[in-house]
Image (cartoon, rainbow, N blue to C red; front, top):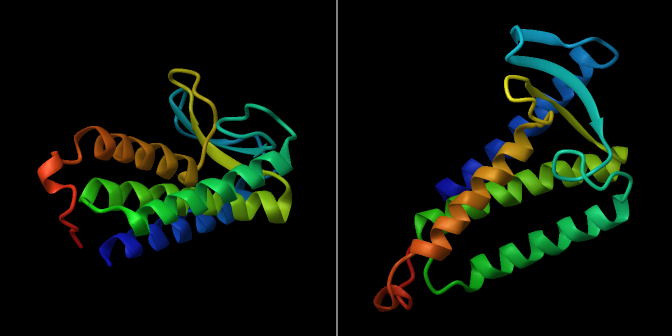
Length: 155
């Protein structure tokens, strides 16, 4: 149950911060929190994964729905549900859903976290959730337990 709460909390945080970014940053030059290092900058992302493949909305929506369905199905059917699987799934599902909502309603995703120290693409809370969740899923798939534990479900 804790992972459901984490997922819902991340989704709510993502939607609230995107709304705040639209209200406070749209049309502006951005706000430096640490000048030259970290800024809040409003960007309308028509692409996927940091702006790649711009203006392919139907592809992104379809891909997001497929990933969400596949991940939820795997989570339900997985013989072993360790913490890495549950955390990773909660984060990927909530992040994917947060960006999917924006893409369907607006045609783009609002990004606003601008880490300039290494010239990183502008991103949002959902993007962070997907990346951290994907890392947790990799840990699950690589180190999720030996064969002796595969048929022992954990909740």
